[in-house]
Length: 390
Ligand SMILES: *Cc1c(COP(=O)(O)O)cnc(C)c1O
Ligand code: SF4
Image (cartoon, rainbow, N blue to C red; front, side):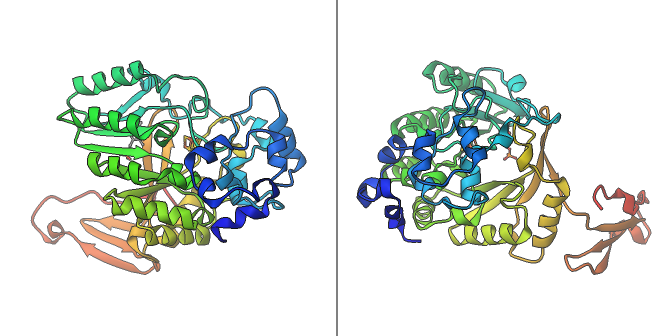
Protein backbone atom coordinates (compact mmCIF):
# COMPACT_ATOMS: atom_id res chain seq x y z
CA UNK A 1 0.00 0.00 0.00
CA UNK A 2 1.33 3.41 -0.92
CA UNK A 3 2.06 5.81 1.88
CA UNK A 4 -0.57 8.18 0.49
CA UNK A 5 -3.32 5.56 0.61
CA UNK A 6 -4.78 7.49 3.55
CA UNK A 7 -6.21 9.95 1.01
CA UNK A 8 -8.92 7.42 0.13
CA UNK A 9 -10.41 8.20 3.54
CA UNK A 10 -12.55 11.32 3.03
CA UNK A 11 -11.65 13.15 6.28
CA UNK A 12 -7.96 13.02 5.43
CA UNK A 13 -8.09 13.43 1.64
CA UNK A 14 -6.70 16.96 1.80
CA UNK A 15 -3.95 16.37 4.36
CA UNK A 16 -0.60 16.94 2.66
CA UNK A 17 1.85 14.05 2.97
CA UNK A 18 4.43 16.28 4.70
CA UNK A 19 1.92 17.05 7.41
CA UNK A 20 0.71 13.46 7.68
CA UNK A 21 4.32 12.42 8.27
CA UNK A 22 4.72 14.58 11.37
CA UNK A 23 4.41 13.22 14.88
CA UNK A 24 2.74 16.43 16.01
CA UNK A 25 -0.11 16.26 13.46
CA UNK A 26 -0.63 12.54 14.10
CA UNK A 27 -0.85 13.00 17.88
CA UNK A 28 -3.18 16.01 17.55
CA UNK A 29 -5.51 14.09 15.25
CA UNK A 30 -5.76 10.78 17.09
CA UNK A 31 -9.16 9.07 16.98
CA UNK A 32 -10.71 9.19 20.43
CA UNK A 33 -14.48 9.24 19.86
CA UNK A 34 -17.05 7.06 18.18
CA UNK A 35 -17.81 9.82 15.65
CA UNK A 36 -14.18 10.02 14.60
CA UNK A 37 -13.96 6.22 14.30
CA UNK A 38 -17.10 6.12 12.15
CA UNK A 39 -15.40 8.34 9.60
CA UNK A 40 -12.75 5.66 9.09
CA UNK A 41 -14.31 2.23 9.64
CA UNK A 42 -17.73 0.61 9.61
CA UNK A 43 -18.19 -0.13 13.30
CA UNK A 44 -19.77 -3.34 14.53
CA UNK A 45 -22.37 -3.13 17.27
CA UNK A 46 -19.89 -4.59 19.72
CA UNK A 47 -17.28 -1.94 18.86
CA UNK A 48 -19.88 0.81 18.95
CA UNK A 49 -21.07 -0.22 22.42
CA UNK A 50 -17.56 -0.63 23.76
CA UNK A 51 -16.39 2.76 22.49
CA UNK A 52 -19.40 4.67 23.78
CA UNK A 53 -19.44 3.01 27.17
CA UNK A 54 -18.83 5.63 29.79
CA UNK A 55 -17.37 3.88 32.77
CA UNK A 56 -14.49 1.52 33.28
CA UNK A 57 -13.16 1.69 29.76
CA UNK A 58 -9.41 1.51 29.12
CA UNK A 59 -8.44 4.67 27.25
CA UNK A 60 -8.65 4.64 23.46
CA UNK A 61 -6.53 6.76 21.12
CA UNK A 62 -5.54 5.79 17.58
CA UNK A 63 -3.14 7.81 15.42
CA UNK A 64 -4.44 8.34 11.87
CA UNK A 65 -1.34 6.48 10.64
CA UNK A 66 -2.49 3.30 12.42
CA UNK A 67 -6.18 3.87 11.66
CA UNK A 68 -5.46 4.03 7.93
CA UNK A 69 -3.98 0.52 8.13
CA UNK A 70 -7.18 -0.89 9.66
CA UNK A 71 -9.54 -2.81 7.40
CA UNK A 72 -12.72 -0.66 7.32
CA UNK A 73 -14.98 -3.65 6.70
CA UNK A 74 -13.36 -6.51 8.54
CA UNK A 75 -13.61 -6.41 12.35
CA UNK A 76 -11.18 -9.35 12.58
CA UNK A 77 -8.38 -7.26 11.01
CA UNK A 78 -5.36 -7.68 13.30
CA UNK A 79 -4.47 -3.98 13.11
CA UNK A 80 -8.02 -3.00 14.01
CA UNK A 81 -8.42 -5.51 16.83
CA UNK A 82 -5.33 -4.20 18.60
CA UNK A 83 -6.73 -0.66 18.68
CA UNK A 84 -10.54 -0.67 18.69
CA UNK A 85 -12.33 -1.76 21.88
CA UNK A 86 -14.98 -4.50 21.74
CA UNK A 87 -17.55 -5.58 24.28
CA UNK A 88 -15.43 -8.59 25.27
CA UNK A 89 -13.25 -6.15 27.22
CA UNK A 90 -16.00 -5.92 29.81
CA UNK A 91 -16.20 -9.64 30.22
CA UNK A 92 -14.16 -10.51 33.29
CA UNK A 93 -12.63 -13.95 33.64
CA UNK A 94 -11.95 -15.41 37.09
CA UNK A 95 -8.27 -15.51 36.09
CA UNK A 96 -8.09 -11.76 35.41
CA UNK A 97 -5.83 -9.65 37.58
CA UNK A 98 -5.48 -5.87 37.86
CA UNK A 99 -1.70 -6.04 38.23
CA UNK A 100 -0.89 -9.42 36.66
CA UNK A 101 2.88 -9.14 37.11
CA UNK A 102 2.74 -7.91 40.69
CA UNK A 103 4.62 -4.78 39.67
CA UNK A 104 3.07 -2.47 42.22
CA UNK A 105 4.37 -4.62 45.07
CA UNK A 106 7.89 -4.59 43.59
CA UNK A 107 8.13 -0.79 43.41
CA UNK A 108 10.57 0.55 45.98
CA UNK A 109 9.82 4.05 44.64
CA UNK A 110 6.95 5.09 42.35
CA UNK A 111 7.64 4.06 38.76
CA UNK A 112 10.60 1.79 39.49
CA UNK A 113 10.11 -1.99 39.44
CA UNK A 114 13.01 -3.88 40.97
CA UNK A 115 12.37 -7.58 40.44
CA UNK A 116 15.73 -8.97 39.34
CA UNK A 117 18.88 -8.19 41.36
CA UNK A 118 20.89 -6.70 38.51
CA UNK A 119 18.26 -4.78 36.54
CA UNK A 120 15.29 -2.49 36.94
CA UNK A 121 12.27 -1.38 34.98
CA UNK A 122 11.93 2.41 35.02
CA UNK A 123 8.46 3.69 34.07
CA UNK A 124 8.94 7.27 32.88
CA UNK A 125 5.54 8.18 31.42
CA UNK A 126 1.92 6.93 31.29
CA UNK A 127 1.17 8.12 27.76
CA UNK A 128 1.34 6.09 24.52
CA UNK A 129 0.82 7.05 20.89
CA UNK A 130 -1.73 4.27 20.59
CA UNK A 131 -3.37 2.31 23.39
CA UNK A 132 -3.23 -1.42 22.78
CA UNK A 133 -6.35 -3.20 23.95
CA UNK A 134 -4.31 -5.99 25.58
CA UNK A 135 -1.90 -3.69 27.43
CA UNK A 136 -0.29 -5.42 30.41
CA UNK A 137 -0.07 -2.08 32.23
CA UNK A 138 -3.59 -0.87 31.53
CA UNK A 139 -3.96 -0.23 35.27
CA UNK A 140 -1.59 2.76 34.97
CA UNK A 141 -1.24 3.51 31.24
CA UNK A 142 -3.38 6.44 30.15
CA UNK A 143 -4.03 7.44 33.78
CA UNK A 144 -2.41 10.13 35.86
CA UNK A 145 -0.12 7.80 37.81
CA UNK A 146 2.50 10.56 37.63
CA UNK A 147 5.55 8.58 36.51
CA UNK A 148 6.71 11.45 34.32
CA UNK A 149 6.86 13.93 37.21
CA UNK A 150 10.48 15.06 37.45
CA UNK A 151 10.40 14.42 41.19
CA UNK A 152 9.45 10.75 40.73
CA UNK A 153 12.08 10.15 38.07
CA UNK A 154 14.70 11.81 40.26
CA UNK A 155 13.76 9.56 43.18
CA UNK A 156 14.05 6.52 40.95
CA UNK A 157 17.45 7.66 39.70
CA UNK A 158 18.61 8.20 43.30
CA UNK A 159 17.53 4.64 44.08
CA UNK A 160 19.53 3.31 41.12
CA UNK A 161 22.55 5.35 42.24
CA UNK A 162 22.33 3.88 45.71
CA UNK A 163 22.09 0.26 44.51
CA UNK A 164 25.36 -0.69 42.90
CA UNK A 165 24.14 -4.12 41.83
CA UNK A 166 21.89 -2.49 39.23
CA UNK A 167 23.78 -2.69 35.96
CA UNK A 168 20.83 -2.66 33.54
CA UNK A 169 17.99 -0.13 33.28
CA UNK A 170 14.96 -0.76 31.08
CA UNK A 171 13.17 2.51 30.38
CA UNK A 172 9.49 1.93 29.69
CA UNK A 173 6.01 3.31 30.48
CA UNK A 174 3.62 4.01 28.75
CA UNK A 175 5.85 4.85 25.85
CA UNK A 176 9.09 6.71 26.59
CA UNK A 177 9.15 8.10 23.05
CA UNK A 178 6.08 10.20 23.83
CA UNK A 179 8.51 12.35 25.83
CA UNK A 180 10.37 15.08 23.97
CA UNK A 181 13.85 14.39 22.64
CA UNK A 182 15.20 16.86 25.21
CA UNK A 183 13.51 15.12 28.15
CA UNK A 184 14.58 11.70 26.94
CA UNK A 185 18.14 12.94 26.52
CA UNK A 186 18.10 14.32 30.05
CA UNK A 187 16.97 10.99 31.54
CA UNK A 188 19.51 9.04 29.47
CA UNK A 189 22.28 11.44 30.50
CA UNK A 190 21.44 11.03 34.19
CA UNK A 191 21.53 7.25 33.86
CA UNK A 192 24.76 7.33 31.87
CA UNK A 193 26.35 9.36 34.68
CA UNK A 194 25.88 6.43 37.10
CA UNK A 195 29.10 4.38 36.89
CA UNK A 196 27.54 0.97 37.65
CA UNK A 197 24.79 1.33 35.00
CA UNK A 198 26.37 -0.34 32.00
CA UNK A 199 23.36 -1.24 29.88
CA UNK A 200 20.33 0.89 29.03
CA UNK A 201 17.43 -0.03 26.81
CA UNK A 202 14.25 1.76 25.83
CA UNK A 203 11.05 -0.26 25.55
CA UNK A 204 8.85 1.46 22.98
CA UNK A 205 6.06 0.72 20.52
CA UNK A 206 6.16 4.15 18.98
CA UNK A 207 8.28 3.19 15.94
CA UNK A 208 5.52 0.65 15.14
CA UNK A 209 2.31 2.52 16.00
CA UNK A 210 3.53 5.94 14.84
CA UNK A 211 6.86 5.60 12.99
CA UNK A 212 7.07 9.32 12.21
CA UNK A 213 8.32 9.76 15.77
CA UNK A 214 11.72 8.57 14.58
CA UNK A 215 13.48 11.71 13.37
CA UNK A 216 17.04 12.83 12.79
CA UNK A 217 16.97 14.72 16.06
CA UNK A 218 15.88 11.62 18.02
CA UNK A 219 18.58 9.59 16.30
CA UNK A 220 21.18 12.17 17.33
CA UNK A 221 20.22 11.63 20.99
CA UNK A 222 20.42 7.85 20.57
CA UNK A 223 23.77 8.01 18.82
CA UNK A 224 25.16 9.93 21.74
CA UNK A 225 23.60 7.98 24.65
CA UNK A 226 23.81 4.54 23.04
CA UNK A 227 20.79 2.70 24.44
CA UNK A 228 19.46 -0.52 22.95
CA UNK A 229 15.80 -0.63 21.94
CA UNK A 230 13.04 -3.17 22.50
CA UNK A 231 10.28 -2.65 19.98
CA UNK A 232 6.92 -4.40 20.01
CA UNK A 233 5.59 -5.98 16.83
CA UNK A 234 2.64 -8.37 16.73
CA UNK A 235 1.73 -8.86 13.06
CA UNK A 236 3.46 -8.72 9.65
CA UNK A 237 0.97 -6.03 8.53
CA UNK A 238 2.66 -3.66 10.97
CA UNK A 239 5.79 -3.62 8.83
CA UNK A 240 4.98 -0.80 6.43
CA UNK A 241 7.25 1.44 4.38
CA UNK A 242 7.38 4.16 7.09
CA UNK A 243 8.19 1.50 9.71
CA UNK A 244 10.99 0.13 7.50
CA UNK A 245 12.35 3.66 7.19
CA UNK A 246 12.14 4.30 10.95
CA UNK A 247 13.89 1.03 11.84
CA UNK A 248 16.51 1.70 9.17
CA UNK A 249 17.26 5.09 10.71
CA UNK A 250 17.54 3.57 14.18
CA UNK A 251 19.79 0.74 13.00
CA UNK A 252 21.94 3.16 11.00
CA UNK A 253 22.31 5.17 14.23
CA UNK A 254 23.85 2.13 15.87
CA UNK A 255 20.86 1.19 18.02
CA UNK A 256 20.57 -2.61 18.40
CA UNK A 257 16.90 -3.45 17.87
CA UNK A 258 14.90 -6.27 19.43
CA UNK A 259 11.20 -7.04 19.24
CA UNK A 260 8.73 -8.42 21.72
CA UNK A 261 5.51 -10.03 20.55
CA UNK A 262 2.38 -10.75 22.53
CA UNK A 263 0.76 -14.02 21.49
CA UNK A 264 -2.92 -13.34 20.79
CA UNK A 265 -5.86 -15.40 19.63
CA UNK A 266 -6.92 -14.61 16.07
CA UNK A 267 -4.06 -12.12 15.63
CA UNK A 268 -0.81 -14.07 15.51
CA UNK A 269 -1.53 -17.51 16.96
CA UNK A 270 -0.60 -19.40 13.78
CA UNK A 271 3.01 -20.48 13.14
CA UNK A 272 2.89 -19.21 9.53
CA UNK A 273 1.99 -15.68 10.66
CA UNK A 274 4.71 -15.61 13.30
CA UNK A 275 7.28 -16.94 10.86
CA UNK A 276 6.36 -14.28 8.32
CA UNK A 277 6.58 -11.60 11.04
CA UNK A 278 10.01 -12.73 12.21
CA UNK A 279 11.37 -13.00 8.66
CA UNK A 280 10.14 -9.49 7.92
CA UNK A 281 11.76 -8.25 11.15
CA UNK A 282 15.15 -9.69 10.21
CA UNK A 283 14.89 -7.84 6.90
CA UNK A 284 14.65 -4.54 8.79
CA UNK A 285 17.43 -5.53 11.21
CA UNK A 286 15.17 -6.21 14.19
CA UNK A 287 15.95 -9.34 16.21
CA UNK A 288 12.89 -11.19 17.60
CA UNK A 289 13.56 -11.32 21.36
CA UNK A 290 10.51 -12.61 23.24
CA UNK A 291 7.06 -14.03 22.51
CA UNK A 292 4.91 -13.44 25.56
CA UNK A 293 2.08 -15.63 26.63
CA UNK A 294 -0.74 -13.06 26.99
CA UNK A 295 -0.83 -11.90 30.62
CA UNK A 296 -4.10 -12.33 32.52
CA UNK A 297 -4.84 -8.60 32.41
CA UNK A 298 -8.35 -7.54 33.33
CA UNK A 299 -10.62 -7.69 30.27
CA UNK A 300 -8.24 -9.50 27.91
CA UNK A 301 -9.42 -13.10 28.14
CA UNK A 302 -10.67 -12.93 24.53
CA UNK A 303 -7.05 -12.48 23.41
CA UNK A 304 -5.58 -15.36 25.39
CA UNK A 305 -4.49 -18.61 23.74
CA UNK A 306 -3.48 -21.85 25.38
CA UNK A 307 0.16 -22.04 26.52
CA UNK A 308 0.75 -24.97 24.16
CA UNK A 309 -0.06 -22.67 21.22
CA UNK A 310 3.18 -20.81 21.97
CA UNK A 311 5.13 -24.06 22.27
CA UNK A 312 3.77 -25.25 18.92
CA UNK A 313 4.92 -22.02 17.32
CA UNK A 314 8.46 -22.45 18.67
CA UNK A 315 8.43 -26.09 17.56
CA UNK A 316 7.60 -24.97 14.00
CA UNK A 317 10.37 -22.34 14.00
CA UNK A 318 13.41 -23.72 15.83
CA UNK A 319 15.61 -25.56 13.35
CA UNK A 320 13.18 -24.89 10.53
CA UNK A 321 14.39 -21.34 9.97
CA UNK A 322 17.19 -18.89 10.84
CA UNK A 323 18.04 -19.07 14.51
CA UNK A 324 17.94 -15.28 14.77
CA UNK A 325 14.29 -15.46 13.73
CA UNK A 326 13.37 -17.57 16.76
CA UNK A 327 12.56 -15.63 19.94
CA UNK A 328 12.25 -17.11 23.41
CA UNK A 329 8.70 -17.96 24.43
CA UNK A 330 8.03 -16.78 27.99
CA UNK A 331 5.25 -16.78 30.52
CA UNK A 332 5.51 -13.87 32.92
CA UNK A 333 4.81 -15.56 36.24
CA UNK A 334 1.57 -13.99 37.56
CA UNK A 335 2.15 -12.23 40.84
CA UNK A 336 5.78 -11.37 40.12
CA UNK A 337 7.59 -14.55 39.05
CA UNK A 338 9.37 -12.81 36.21
CA UNK A 339 9.78 -14.22 32.74
CA UNK A 340 9.81 -18.00 32.68
CA UNK A 341 11.06 -19.54 29.41
CA UNK A 342 9.26 -22.51 27.88
CA UNK A 343 10.70 -24.74 25.17
CA UNK A 344 9.41 -27.78 23.39
CA UNK A 345 11.12 -30.78 24.92
CA UNK A 346 14.10 -32.09 22.97
CA UNK A 347 15.33 -34.56 25.61
CA UNK A 348 14.07 -38.08 24.92
CA UNK A 349 15.95 -39.61 27.85
CA UNK A 350 19.18 -39.43 29.84
CA UNK A 351 20.86 -42.31 31.64
CA UNK A 352 24.40 -42.45 33.05
CA UNK A 353 25.54 -39.50 31.01
CA UNK A 354 24.06 -40.73 27.77
CA UNK A 355 21.60 -38.20 26.45
CA UNK A 356 19.09 -39.20 23.84
CA UNK A 357 17.89 -36.08 22.10
CA UNK A 358 15.60 -35.42 19.18
CA UNK A 359 16.25 -32.79 16.55
CA UNK A 360 13.80 -30.39 14.89
CA UNK A 361 12.83 -33.07 12.35
CA UNK A 362 12.07 -35.63 15.06
CA UNK A 363 15.17 -37.79 14.56
CA UNK A 364 16.96 -39.14 17.61
CA UNK A 365 20.64 -38.64 18.38
CA UNK A 366 22.74 -39.59 21.39
CA UNK A 367 25.36 -37.45 23.05
CA UNK A 368 27.60 -39.24 25.53
CA UNK A 369 29.24 -37.21 28.27
CA UNK A 370 32.90 -37.89 29.11
CA UNK A 371 32.07 -39.19 32.57
CA UNK A 372 29.79 -41.84 31.15
CA UNK A 373 32.69 -44.04 29.96
CA UNK A 374 34.25 -44.87 33.29
CA UNK A 375 35.82 -42.25 35.55
CA UNK A 376 33.76 -39.64 37.34
CA UNK A 377 30.55 -39.76 39.19
CA UNK A 378 27.54 -41.53 37.80
CA UNK A 379 24.68 -39.19 37.22
CA UNK A 380 21.06 -39.63 37.92
CA UNK A 381 19.00 -40.52 34.92
CA UNK A 382 16.40 -38.35 33.40
CA UNK A 383 13.36 -40.12 32.12
CA UNK A 384 11.11 -38.71 29.47
CA UNK A 385 8.93 -37.51 32.33
CA UNK A 386 11.63 -34.85 32.75
CA UNK A 387 9.68 -33.24 29.98
CA UNK A 388 7.32 -30.67 31.37
CA UNK A 389 5.91 -30.41 27.94
CA UNK A 390 4.39 -33.16 25.82
C1 LIG B 1 11.08 -7.88 31.50
C2 LIG B 1 11.60 -7.23 32.68
C3 LIG B 1 12.96 -6.95 32.79
C4 LIG B 1 13.97 -7.30 31.71
O1 LIG B 1 14.09 -8.68 31.56
P1 LIG B 1 15.07 -9.28 30.43
O2 LIG B 1 14.85 -10.74 30.47
O3 LIG B 1 16.46 -8.87 30.85
O4 LIG B 1 14.69 -8.66 29.14
C5 LIG B 1 13.39 -6.35 33.95
N1 LIG B 1 12.55 -6.03 34.96
C6 LIG B 1 11.23 -6.31 34.87
C7 LIG B 1 10.36 -5.97 36.00
C8 LIG B 1 10.70 -6.91 33.74
O5 LIG B 1 9.40 -7.15 33.65
S1 SF4 C 1 2.35 0.74 23.60
FE1 SF4 C 1 2.89 -0.70 25.26
S2 SF4 C 1 2.41 0.42 27.14
FE2 SF4 C 1 1.36 1.49 25.47
S3 SF4 C 1 -0.69 0.61 25.42
FE3 SF4 C 1 0.56 -0.55 23.95
S4 SF4 C 1 1.31 -2.32 25.16
FE4 SF4 C 1 0.59 -0.76 26.64
